[in-house]
Image (cartoon, rainbow, N blue to C red):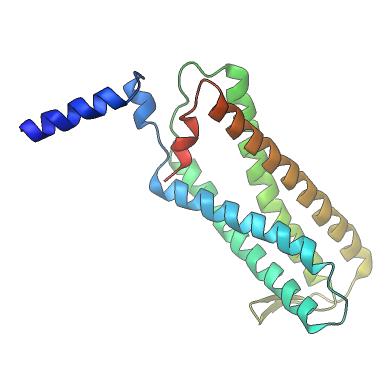
Length: 195
């Protein structure tokens, strides 16, 4: 009993005075795992996408990297659909009361845009690949090939690159928002999505 009282006193003395709700308002463990897994895979896909296009055509390495890119893309699609389902059935923690309304709206719009782009990107890539010379394989297992149709494939490849650029811009905006809160009045806000 005395030990618990001392521990509570110590925690109260080192914790800044903040509303209890702000200390408890965290994302669930599942949401945190889904967030960081998605983030790691998307960043890996962007880096891989840039690197694989520099590898000379006709080399085995290029084929291996493209197949890896397609396979991870399908994993990202499945993961983002699971994450969307989780988000629709689990309410995110509320923002602290002193967060400006425009900041809340920008955060909401950014998250919605992430979901749209992270679903659209692998779907566009899948369809473009299905109309390509090699089709789509998941870690070597053939999935689909709809016949080589350059007239359909080329606009989809262009859209795939365009969406990738939008995702990079959105990631930068998201990171700027995290840094802005980290350096501003809401230093602990980022911890809602940390381990």
